[in-house]
Length: 109
Length: 114
Image (cartoon, rainbow over all chains, first blue to last red; front, side):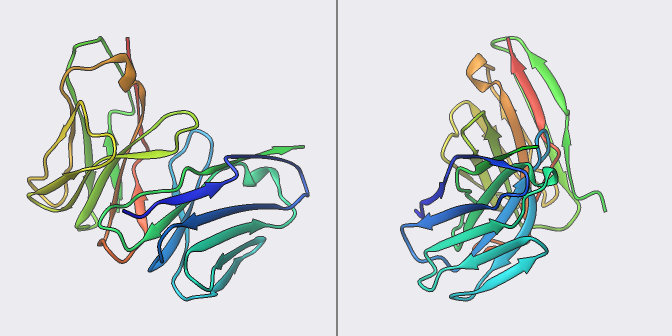
């Protein structure tokens, strides 16, 4: 089955610094989804990327899908305390809904 | 719409007890799945279902049973609880798999086995 690896596992940044998390797949993905889980909460869907090389933005968040559709990244510009949480990617095209290991972001005020 | 509803929100069990975690969705989603989340381990798939009457194992199915008699409900049964099953459990549903579509999660069940 598809294996989606996510790095880094943890990231601590000063408030105002940028943050990036990466997902890498061993196989070509049909699409990729990103989720955010606030501390103590449940994962919530952020976005879906489908096309090779696709870039989508949501305010300070920029999502990219690689040209080969094997990797993706989420970049947050000028982090805020509200960005705290764990970010998961999910590689579409499986019969099963499986997630990367997640990147936990903590913000130092 | 209620979305995905999980009950109970919290549960404490003694070793060896059995119980059922309930999950219901009102979005007419075909796909439903159960995960456990342990610190630093991400979301690990326990069991999933692609439609009523169809279930299959995920990566950590031992000690858990599921059934899918209706589209709406997907209960998870712990047969004989063990301390290693202490975790947070999430149920999720989505319109269809494969293809990748937005998944909706329940609020989670925090289970402690003593």
